[in-house]
Length: 115
Image 1 (cartoon, rainbow, N blue to C red):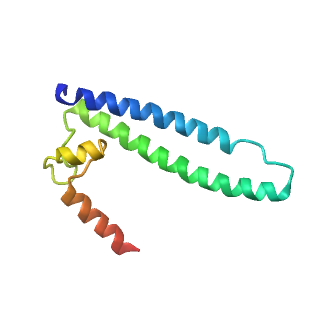
Image 2 (image 1 turned 180 degrees about the vertical axis):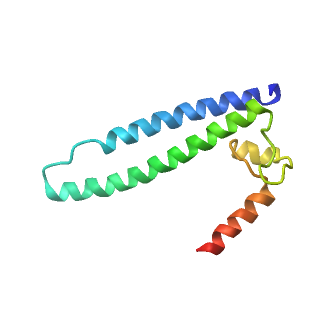
Image 3 (image 1 turned 30 degrees about the horizontal axis):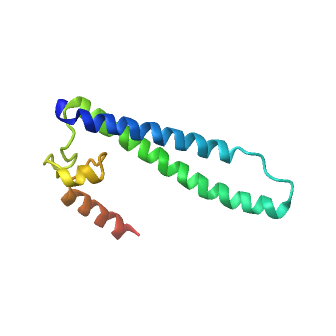
């Protein structure tokens, strides 16, 4: 676990930033609508975008929490599918990654075939 202590701190910082972002999005969505009908339409469109951003933030928050749990369990850096090490480059780019490149590529291929 000591090996990934700096990563853990970075993930906690990321989690705090995401929580702040989500709180701001939630606050903005709860703002009352303007009395002007045209402005209400614009606000509704903006709320849809904010809702999408909020969902993305919630997903990322969950991934970050899972990564912190893997660090605490001594499982960080191991692919959750094949149990092989995840490359340092991938972890540096996506510190909450739970899949090696090979497994991530095969899963995204499966998702692409479903649509």
